[in-house]
Image (cartoon, rainbow, N blue to C red; front, side, top):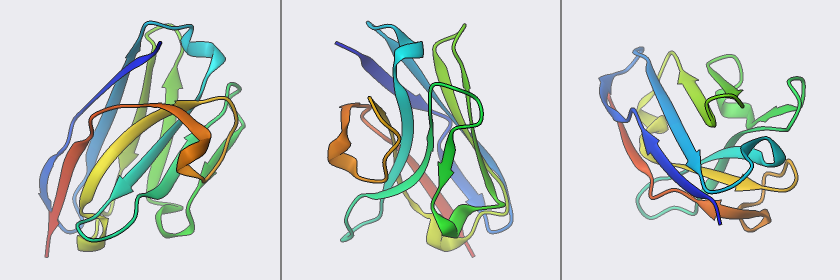
Length: 122
């Protein structure tokens, strides 16, 4: 059983930056694909980025390409999401997830954190 806890959310103005982190425990971190999803009020949970078990296996949704960067540190059991040039439409609760394959589909991930709020004001 893997436990995930996100941190680093907050409120920023448009154009600002935030760095989200997700700490994992209870499993062999390097065995898992790690993903970030987000959910805005009244909307479905959507894929943001995923990082496979190896460094070049990363995937982003089109709306964050060039602005967000996902990275992982297997020695520290963490995955991070560096978010630059933030826009009001990035406002959402951001979730960290662990699964067995790089996927954009939420139900392909087995473990989820409780989420962290990101609010971007215009």
